[in-house]
Length: 178
View 1 (cartoon, rainbow, N blue to C red):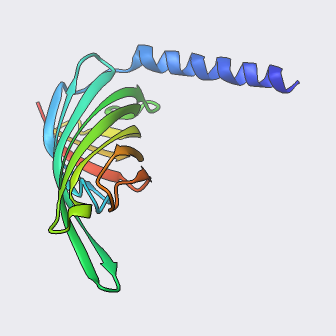
View 2 (view 1 turned 135 degrees about the vertical axis):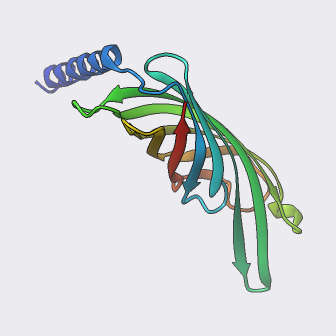
View 3 (view 1 turned 180 degrees about the vertical axis):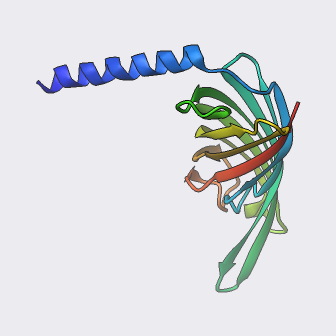
């Protein structure tokens, strides 16, 4: 009985996703602006460029920076980080609301952290799934989005924040569309 129910749920999910893919359309081709994130160690503020490669498929590129302070009994360690990221996003309409879509996808991020402490500076590399909502205003060239990018770092400096799983990278973006 459980297997039959699971098969029906999977079939329904595939059907709904297929309809979403067939009906998904973009109200803009490209957008440029800014993204702000709660990920204090990296990507706090970044430039954002988004371009649609098909009606439903888009790439988002970010260049940004972040900072962090690690406190210990003998002092604190400060880092400043420069980051680059790229993500593929596949968009699906949300009901009959014109300009509103949700998306799923994934991407990668590369970071360089600088610090006066050797253990906290260096190169980091990670991958992330992403999901969010995207809205294009009808009468003005403005797009806004909200996303979540839990990141898995697999290359990093000896110490510091970017080890293993980093779940708190949620952000919002505002972009000029053209």
